[in-house]
Length: 166
Image (cartoon, rainbow, N blue to C red; front, side, top):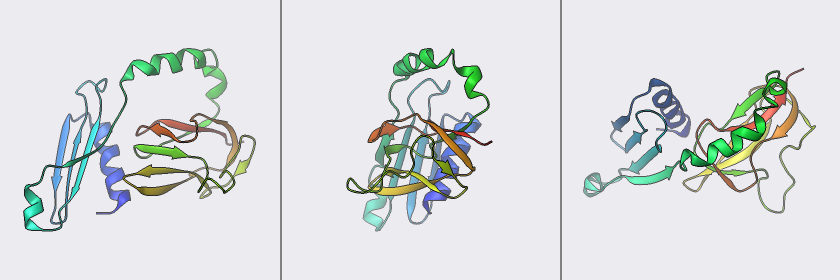
């Protein structure tokens, strides 16, 4: 099972409202748990199964979303500007992990505010389980705002960038 399939599974579970989904295949075991009212923490567990003796091992917890208590503080300052942002496209995180704005500490940033981007351009990297996933733009336009600090943890479906498509 590749990363895209896992990402699509996480998206599907988040949209379906299911509280828990378990998937076991020959080489992988995945458990996705969400709060039943979507206010609780979300847990994704992933365990590769390499040998029969490992099939009995418990799944390895990958990430937990932080408590939603921090979100209202972020939402209040942006509320007055909500009508300004309606014309922008929000690029969201497809996975849980750590957000990085550049490929390595000594390299330049992928994108900056005011930069024009095209569909397929790499915007950032999200590290999950020691895998560095390049996040590509699905739209063309101008980067208006970067909503996440470098080296910060991000949640699934968390807004990362605002892009003006005009």
